[in-house]
Image (cartoon, helix red, strand yellow):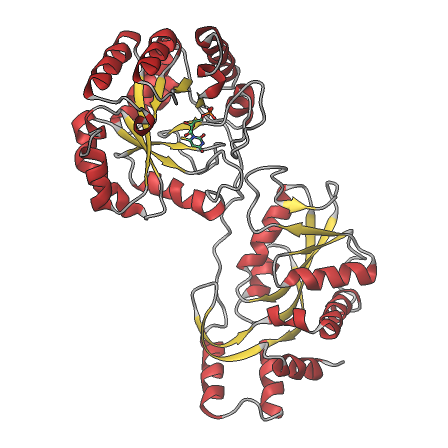
Length: 476
Ligand code: S5P
């Protein structure tokens, strides 16, 4: 099959669409090539994979056969698979997002450092997506010299990739596609004018370098230093409290009877920096509970964290925070907030936070199996925290990502010494792993302590494990 025949076949299966389409880069285009439909035409798909392979290895520019081919979900994945099977070249797959749990691999498949990878994409526009793929491959020690695509939309990708030391091979360009459509009478008149004008106007799209891959990094500052950087007053208070009391243990007091919670607080109060409540699970709740808990908190010097997980519109969370039976804003030093409603939710807390100088903890990642707080959602939560430093004191997360700044307190639930999980989706890691490997600041332990027959003895062990892990880190 030659290029003209291929283009007409793609046109026949509706892979070429004319109209108004928003590209990933945000540009509106009058022509859109949707190669996803090729999965419905296996013969054509096999030919595409072969033509792409030939383009790289018969043009004489590529240096020998690659060790691996890399497919990027979704469109290019079946193409790369076809190439891998036909030429017996093992494949790796670059995930769009690293999984939050399990093996946490960004690149799936077996490989060794230094392996050369041929990146296979369906099409390139500006080259930004390819650069992201290359970045992730490089981050695990793989090298990339050649990139093959079916279609080069001729909007700057070739130049951008060249600048980054990458050779781009394309089976056909947008110009060739359009010429073929014109010659066969499939593109004419006003639509043709629109397409031509668009291509001319968007010939060279410059792309900013892709954002760095999400990596777990340690803070090099001690809590005392971070207290000075923190903007939210409760974050400052908590950093100072941890530094002076020498504890980064928070306990989740998920008991349903107020006296049981007070007994627990009294017994472990000396070991913790924070006591976390779920106020709405207490069966015999009344206002006396709060004053009693506050007295214990000031005696033992810990803060009270109400894990309300607010998630509604600003107006509703304002009521939920300040009113109702619990009047949370009056006593909680910190509360948890989900980001599903968008950043305007913060507005609902502004008045209430002033009452206590308290702070918000945004749920950036969750410990439960199948959590949807991953990838772009996590990034958005970090951004929300960075944009609202006065209100947001920290994040609930499972790891410290590069974009999590030192002013934020990072708290991690899902911690136990001797369990990997429960029957309801909870997943556990050890204190050492969370503080030392995942670089967060505070462990939150619930059942590991309050269900133990000796909660105080157990709290002492958790405190020592997480504080020693903190002290063993490298600081400036
Ligand atoms: O992702 C999360 C966020 C939170 S706040 N996973 C969690 O488990 N939590 C809370 O931490 C949860 O509501 C519970 O109160 C505590 C963990 O308790 P454990 O008994 O599983 O240690």
